[in-house]
Image (cartoon, rainbow, N blue to C red; front, side, top):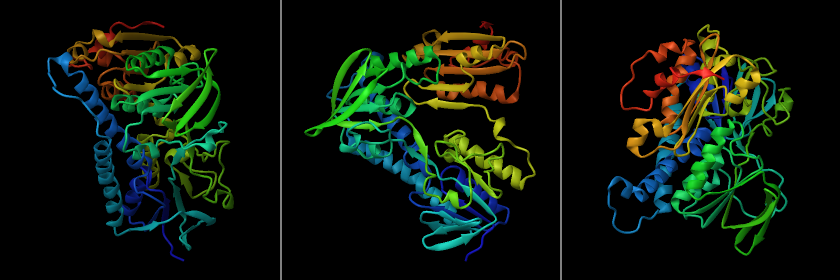
Length: 457
């Protein structure tokens, strides 16, 4: 029985990072991967999708070239095989880099196969039992498939399998009007597909403020993406080579006939085949592994990081999980999960950058607060680039003067949001930024201006 100081199951963002830190401290580490190295981000998430977003942006810009005084002769087409090849090259480069880094570390033993608990402190992989006093779970998640009548009778795509298409769908129907669904909706619309989005909630990305949801809906509608909100009574049937989704939305019944169907209604953790019951690891009702502020599970000596703990489900939060665990185990640190500020992006075009609390959350909390907003059409940089859709919003605590949250839906919003995020982590009053002199012309330069226009919420 090979004995190690630590076993890491999964090579998503947290796993390799932690494995290298542990190995660097002199530990003998085993890391297990059942499929592709790099996890969701590298293989079916951030890396491939943002590569396709870039291709879609190029297609959109080519169609808009005349607005900038640029003449393009001939038809503008999308070669889906080349789009896929470019995506595969980019993700392959990252995937190989993760694997090469692990295999080249003398203190890390790489095992390829599905790891399961055999008993406390012992993990089985490929018929072999490994032991270690410290075990770290980084097993990720996958698309959740709801029990829609007829769905099991048709072929459908998930966020993973849609990436393998080498043809542009004639009509892509997407069930799920949140982050994954909306990014794919815009990408394939720009590639030339007819796109319909079905969402059970009364508005898109329901966790956001209503004005943000409405603005994103407007952006998508301008590109002729059909939206069916408040949808109910969904049923899926097959009609020849097509897929028919029947639904009721706004009191109107519809039958949508599509060539392809994407299921994008959420995620579920890959925890159902780990043998957690053999060691007594607690999970919640959805299967996410329960962890405390240090990422420790209910069983001493076992930690859960990344998507499987339900405490972030982003690449950056998974990486931060690894940093928290490594700092506390190796550096004598006192880092905590609760120190992390909510931060994420929606990579539509324009993108949405989001940090901290929403306006609705601030109002519900009943705390004295200030708020400022600005339309992107009032931002010189956006106007000059011809990308004026969206708006910015900043929320500030009325007593501490600290930023509570912000939304930037507009050109560069996914990058500009970090300026405010840094201010939040610094726990500095908003006046620090308000009095700063930013460079013109940029989107960021309007943040001090907005902070000078704060009004009571």
